[in-house]
Image 1 (cartoon, one colour):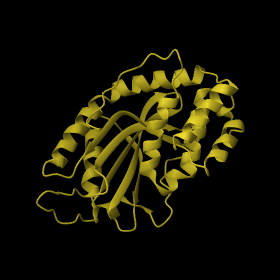
Image 2 (cartoon, helix red, strand yellow):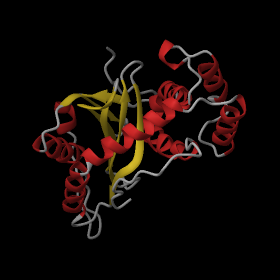
Image 3 (cartoon, one colour):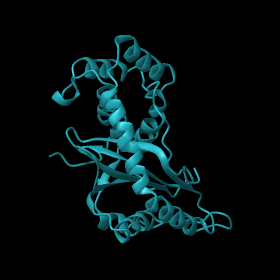
Image 4 (cartoon, one colour):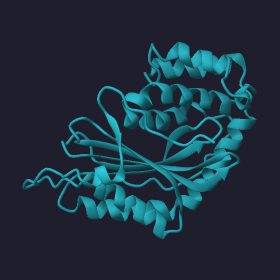
Length: 255
């Protein structure tokens, strides 16, 4: 079974937890109070474990200047057959983006990772930013059970939604026109959709097309900008809504 990893190009690299702990934050100003990458990760990890969630694997990515951090934590918890919970966390100490957390899923057959927008946290680096982030994490973790149920329903619907040629072409075109998929990624997506690498995704379902997207993002955007890949998969959800889908609800926290 494949395990998760963060692949980094253009100078970014994967680091160990010990290396992450050694990276210091810049000194605060009167209005900006940066939180260290390690403290951001530790808050998520501690809350998950305290709530009884087991972390199967974790990966950390750091930019060359060490100011931007993105990590993933794969959980043992099952969503549905072959799919487990995953958590993404990010931080910056150069004011480029706030502290953030998103929950998603890991498709084990091909190790595809996608993030979803039902549970998202983003907190600015203010005097009480870290405390509010910890509070947000606690609320998010408390709603994970509801998230698992909602995701299972969504995935099962995609698995049972067999796309016509027109429907598949429409989704692909919309993703290109809205810049979710770029010019370089488009032929890769079409190839993966028409000739899937894995037998599980040869049934022509919306689930197969979804995994074509996550496979392409894993080979392209995830390798250079993992946070952007997470945002893209969240935005892609809007294109995968069968006409008969009944919206499921999950708590959305302070985006």
